Image 1 (cartoon, rainbow, N blue to C red):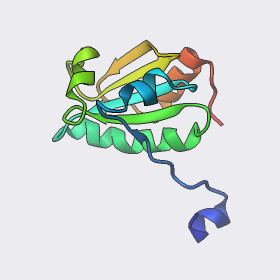
Image 2 (image 1 turned 90 degrees about the vertical axis):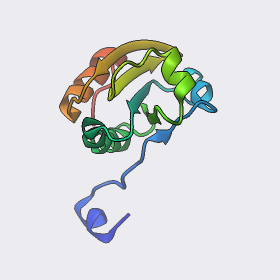
Image 3 (image 1 turned 120 degrees about the horizontal axis):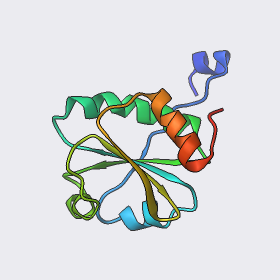
Length: 124
């Protein structure tokens, strides 16, 4: 933790878990926690904007919701199985089942509300 964030009481940033074809089943489908998967592609400007939103959510929901990021170039089989047709797409999984899907950029407020609605987990 940096001295300034320690002084201000902030918590250290938590990065989303990297997911690819080799660990998708373990990290997402077998997760004990509910999971958000940010599916992105290279050169996608809205995907880049969503990156900071996912870091914020990973930090805020640490230990309650697993936040993952999955590049389509690193997980082509998973992206195909999930029928990803646009990026960014955020998928909400609970107990290995997809519960919600959001295509396009949405800010952190939208995703906090969706987490509350889909998973019943409120923000801190």
